[in-house]
Length: 244
Image (cartoon, rainbow, N blue to C red; front, side, top):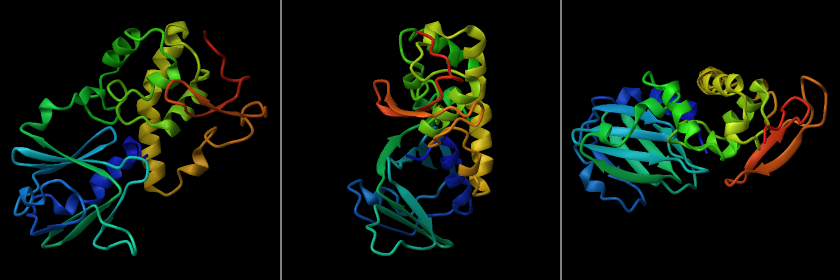
């Protein structure tokens, strides 16, 4: 599933269509396609893992799910197109994604201060929300999109390792200094992720995700499906204390 930084890259890639009218639309989506015909794109936005195409009074929300993708000015061979949007200067094709219309003001749907990559990101609000779920495991809390919109499993693993917290630690048991650092790191690492992804070098900067040996202490790294969400965690039990 694409994480927040990857959605920023989608937004950048389609920027040439801002202000352009949709002149043709097709695909196997079940949404009402004619609603978009001749509509002018006002703005492309992102919120966490959601890619948003904004029109006057209407927004198309694109969620790439686990295996969604897109192409610009080309089509993938032998792949069913979920939605094609054609403009006078090119086209966007979406594959294997979820599409939904949001009517009215897009600001009524999203809390921008929860998006770790948004200028309105508010770490104090994030801490308040964490305090409201004291018994939740931190591996689950970090994936709660209403707290850390855009944080996915890779970011979760990397920041827990950087800060030195076991993913199965209970939120209220984590020392305040560690918790504060962890909240800060969600934003810091997300922007580093963006730059590395933009330069096609993300994987070489992974410190623990998919790794087998700890780069800090040379201990074996444990792979485990953790939390209610049962997402993959990579853990160095020596460098990541368990707070429970």
